[in-house]
Length: 187
Image (tube, rainbow, N blue to C red; front, top):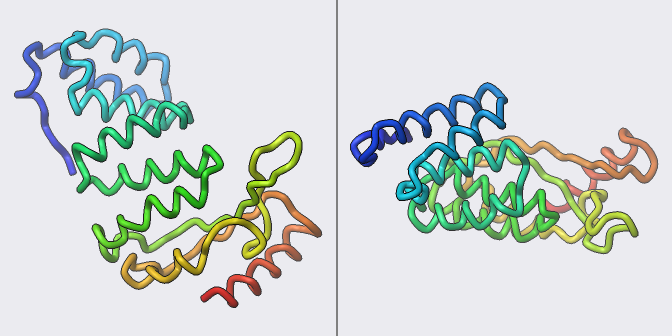
């Protein structure tokens, strides 16, 4: 969805700075994007186009704690933008709130039927270790409710799953086989 907000900006320079910030993000120059956003007039800082670019920057910076409330605010204004649902769940996942991420994304399967053909699946354990609040684990051994998620696979249009595991028990191949066997029991 492309929206042209040029008529919504009293100062044409603000639209230029918004576009430039988005362009800098696309080029990977996050500092220049930040600099452009600072040049936007204070009275327009809460404009949806500015907030969208700010969320784009926060995503690129992997600033999940700040991105999450901004994405939730944008979702209230634009519930039909599917990428906002995805970005919110991605931020929750990166904040080690994976089950909450899946739960937050489930309503999107009804809102956007057949939209989610590819899904990234990763199980996690909230107990973690002394240096982590949350750890990756073998599918079916963690806290993620895959049965609840997979109940909506047809509605979501799910065709392909990518399974990830980071903390191996035996080896990548051996643990992948266990994940596959456990996953077969879930579907």
